Image 1 (cartoon, rainbow, N blue to C red):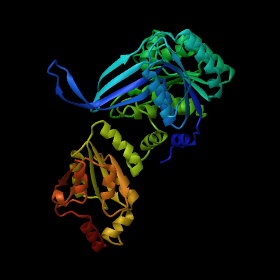
Image 2 (image 1 turned 90 degrees about the horizontal axis):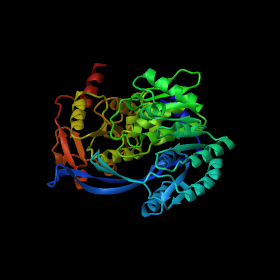
Image 3 (image 1 turned 120 degrees about the horizontal axis):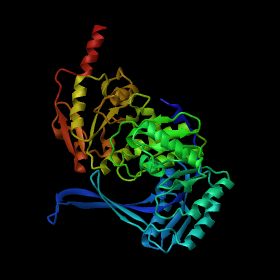
Image 4 (image 1 turned 180 degrees about the horizontal axis):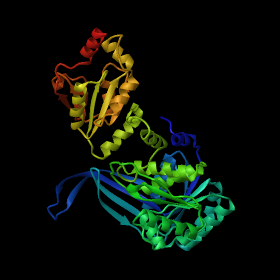
Length: 486
């Protein structure tokens, strides 16, 4: 189903958005924990791969690029290897770094996260939070004027690492006012007066309490604190992010808008705020009303927490997520190209992918038992169904009874099923080679070696599981009985 918000998202163009703030280098050590150190009661992480990503304000820019925007960054890096590497990964991600200056007075901030399976075990920070050196500050102010003029919207991403000095903030606000550009703030610290002149600001509950000195333990207290801040800053609106409780939008002379978060499996909250701010900025830059922009930002932040590490979200993921709220589990139904990155995310979380396939024409109890068995073999279950043309070749010209789109929707509505994909071939071998599941499940009177695709799955270390046969139950026999009675 195409909802108003999915249609709005599809209408967005490619705005240019400037992100000014603290630039960080995010490092990841991914691995497995299988034993405890003999030196002390601590786990040993066996590192299997390392990764470096843009962090801080650069992560907001990375999210904007993933969302289809043109993004530029303004900030500083140190005169060091980490700074050089940060510029490299920003360039690789399509971020304009022409307004990034070098500050020789301090190193590039680095956050190193150690992740075992899907669990963040430790974060190590290397940073110096002093203000920019004066020569770097002057250089940054000079570059900002040109960048603000070219942007459709400016995002201030403050991580309190020293990039957004009073002089830098004053320069941004003055240039934005001069060129009539909206300014959205992701704040930090207790003094929000430094952001006066912004168009909108998006604090979390802790930041709202710190900035106002007011309690925020319930809706009434949150509203009182937000309204106070709204008056103090004289901005257009305040968006309070509330974690699992969603978001609350406060505007002058209007009732608060509370957008609730959907229940989700949360893997990592790191970076979700950046994703929300980036989506909010994209929507506002494309002319969306604040309430529509907030609903999109809420969906994007919700998707981000289901991913391990500081991750990005795409427009299509938001569209699918919004559609899933209004239709019969459509986000479960995927093309192969859509499914591949999803399965990579599951594997990054060390999750086992199970796979089963069949025609699934006229669903019966035998199918349900096979699916329940298949789901128990892994953390994620992919169900591949034969296309109508394939079923016709395998079962005869009068099959299928139920067309592939409806078969896919019925399977997607089942709790045990995580993804449904349609394939055109008569066997799933080519699909298996692309998806590379850990477990191949088949229902029926087979031995594991007789299952089609068994040799393919075993080639990469996978295994085959055969579900117990539900005797006396088959679609073919059911169809015969129905036709005989009719």
